[in-house]
Image 1 (cartoon, rainbow, N blue to C red):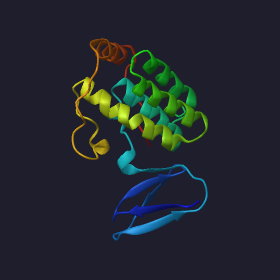
Image 2 (tube, rainbow, N blue to C red):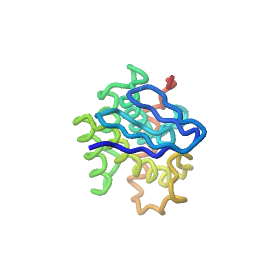
Image 3 (cartoon, rainbow, N blue to C red):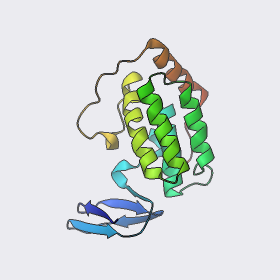
Image 4 (cartoon, one colour):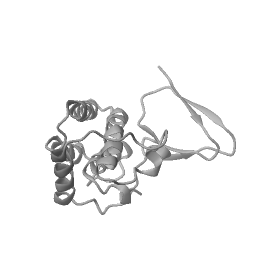
Length: 169
């Protein structure tokens, strides 16, 4: 089954680590073989990887982009997911962590990122942070229904695991 991408003028995407930029007109691109593809609007910048869930997303993204061997291993991603398992208590959130881990283990990195996107938005509300601009799709995230223990655990995890200093090339 082919993947059809609709690209806006000037839109960039990463295909197997290569950066592809569309020209000055809308274009359609059909990818007929398996490839690791991520749109620029879905890329989390290193300076935005400042919270536990964002660091997990960043580690998964680096596997996808193969940008940095120090962060681009599945081990770095699994370490972040293990940290998050002690933070999120609700089944709806642990299901997302399970989904992200399972997809990553099966080589479906983009689907792992999709599973983490909801947690990134949820975490932003819990920590009273603005969500990454690139992740905002339909306005502001819904207000959370979180326990005080979940908020405290997330804040503690933020302190235990500092953000990466590395940059995506």
